[in-house]
Amino acid sequence: MSQDIAHLRKSYERAELSEDASHADPMAQFAQWFDEALKSELPEPNAMTLATVGSDLRPSTRVVLIKEFDARGIVWYTNYQGRKGLELAGNPYAALQFHWVELERVVRIEGLVEKVSTEESDAYFATPLDSRIGAWASPQSQVIPDRTVLVTAAAKYGAKFLLHPPRPPHWGGYRLKPDTWQFWQGRKSRLHDRLRYRLEKDAWVRERLAP
Image (spheres, rainbow, N blue to C red):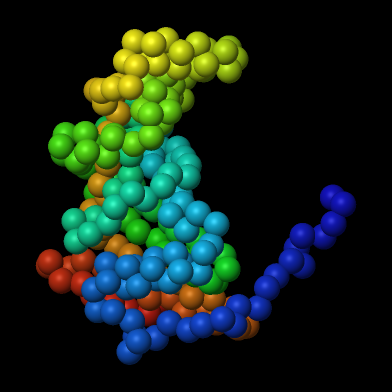
């Protein structure tokens, strides 16, 4: 190796996370942190890592973008026929993670995933035209010989649908319904603040975990 990465470390000293200052409802706590990430003008604060597990029990991760959140859960949109869609069809449990490096914060979310309604997917699909054509053109997660396949398919569907491409039947939204949250705030000397919320009999239990 050209450098010794074992000694790379940072002292986290920006903020703290206490039980008294945090919300009893984890979605309210998430909304506060997400708003602070937006106001801090971080690069892509809406980016989150999605983890799923396939039938071979091998986990896989990828970055997706949060598009909506409310009391029902966390929403993103994608191709249902890609690897993540196929894995969710076989195992509907997944995990999400936000890492806001500049704020020294991590949010981890676990729960059951379900497809959003047809109406919600249709409403969101009214996005920029290029993105709608891309949803038709990309056979997500499939092996293709080169980029020409995508460009040719985009041209084909662009000519077919013009300015009004409908939502593909294989494309839409997912909603993760949280049953576990973790909020991590970096602190000095590795004594980080870590609060977990877990759903127990339809009520949220908040507890501190050792870092």
